[in-house]
Image (cartoon, rainbow, N blue to C red):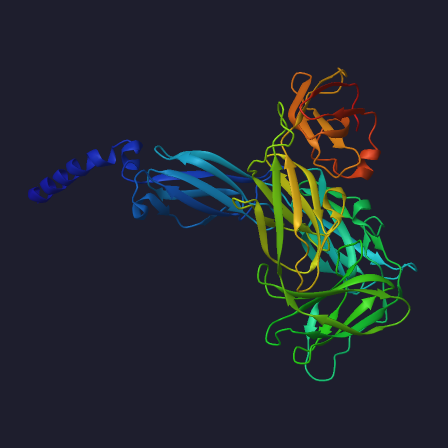
Length: 535
């Protein structure tokens, strides 16, 4: 009996020092943890059952031991989470929950453990409403599209973020909208292209339609009023449409691939939105487009992805009857060529400007596009020749980005620098674009005379009589300057923001207050004083 007591005492004496080790010694063996809460960034309330994903990176270069895999965890009903069993490393956490934007907390270096970590999730917003006709009756199966409205480089861009259809009571609900500005459009009946076999396919309710309407009630996107969504907001936006007789366009595709899906669209001229239902027989190529109210349309058929796309399009005018026998010949994209001549300014006794190598890029933006279009881009070779491959038929706005400035941009008699559009016909390469760039910039320096204008200011030089690139200058201590101003006539304005004004839009500029007129000559400097805010 005595020997058993001795063995027990020896065991207790051996394990007691381990039990009394400090917490940091246990953690050095790899038992670190991170704990914290997930909260609503607006209300501060806990966000329940948010999913927490964890990524860890330990010291070292071996990928197998450097990047750590950790199982995700769920926050509990009080928004609290606890992640145990972590090695000494640097961790980043990401929380996500339906109805909230995803957010993360990074740079958490363990050793010791971390407590009190707070991840703030921003609640998403929603826009709801009804679509009614002129008699107050609900309109069902209307395609409602939400376009995110952003201003980039002075131009408003609309990119589609969500799309739903109205129910039988004309109601719609757009959800999970991040903070920002949105334009809401009743585009038409739920639009899609359906393939069929046999003689044909009927489309219900195709005898009447309406013109696309942006909230609060305009047919042009430039006149649409963006809805400014703040975190967690719920906005009501009703739309009224005017129903009228609708007609069809019937025709046939030629040169298409019957084994691949084809999309047929009808873009209303000046709107850039396809809002019509279409049916197509892939075997015969016969198609019908429904729901078209009187007006001018660009009818387009598309197969394949960008860069390897076949397309056909044709302008059609609809009066008071159906349009038949429209033929669409599918064609692959063509090569658009441009040549750049770059000149140095004249010096001394030179009679002609010196030519130089310029770093010039050409961007082609499609005009008839539903979203903010991604440009087709080309850059010059050593001889100044530019080739942009696979450009499908359509109308394009051209931008020249250069280390100099575009003095002239011509194509087949079209002045692309002053509002002209490059038209690419099916299977036919357009005329070569001739670009002349120069580097004889002028300079503009100025001061702000308005002491109450505020701290965050910008000076804008808006070209007069030409579609040149506007010049923006940050105001520092009441002064601004740019040494890269293309020669020409300008109107200078003082702005308190560049993100909220379409300064590349002439209609918007015409509504600004004040401003100073100036002319910039090559190689010369102009001084101006801006006296008041233009907004």
